[in-house]
Image 1 (tube, each protein chain N blue to C red):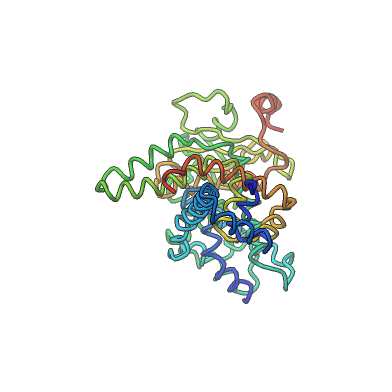
Image 2 (image 1 turned 90 degrees about the vertical axis):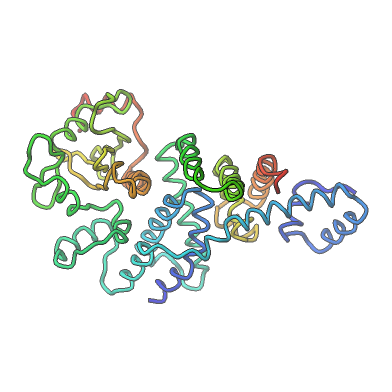
Length: 162
Length: 240
């Protein structure tokens, strides 16, 4: 019971993490759902006393990688057109603010996967470098160089507005 | 004094040692460029955090909380196979609403499919039922048997997605259609459905459907999807 309760408390953060990885709300919740399913099936692999959040982030991230690789790159053009259609009815000011939000989504989406996950864990989820590197199974130096490149790309896309 | 990008970033992320942090702060007082650069990095961090922050206070979809609620109940097998088997003898408790649909994603959704098509085995029906299994028939069987992902006719009812060998050794193919999408795996001379979801026509499910199918496929896969050559060879050898 406690395990499920702990997962439930983690869900808002997991959903945020999934959203920053996938950009799309439905894909993000699908990802969370698969992560929960895997966690429930493999609960005996989680060692009590270790951080459940890191374990869950790692599961979520691994499923995301598998899913994206299996599906190949998605069609961004179609997604962008959908997004435009959705804002068409809004008044101008609201649309502008929505478009700005969309800029972040789009800029994140353009990052290579390994930069996106690093940016997401550190800048959005607030993990320390050491924790994020451990979670991704990479040395800290690799993490920080991915962060530098990811940040540079985001600054190029979002710089003036930031 | 100049600081490299990595050091500036570490400072903004609170990952600098105290001595370096002091040096940066001292330098910032006289170096407007440095101060501006740090300001930009901070703004980026804040912008990203602010952008995703609202997700935290969103209501969590029922399909996610329902999974945890049912998991907290004792003696529940959460594997796909276990849930399928569980449903088979729990039929009297099956009253799934829209919220639970997602929780069933990528598992066999017999009820909906039966309701939609009937299973009389008519020539236009994409499925027939054999015991607990759902077997491709009619246009779906045609597509799974003959259609290559690399050469699909526009007027075909179904589009083939991935072809792959499952961990069990059999060949499986994912497909999508207006009414139903899913994955069929070779079972003798038939294609047995291992996963079905409402198709593209049901717009509520459209996105959930394609990513759930892809996720289910990646779970099943032994290696990776076949390329066009391997797919053609598999067809020529009767999908064995």
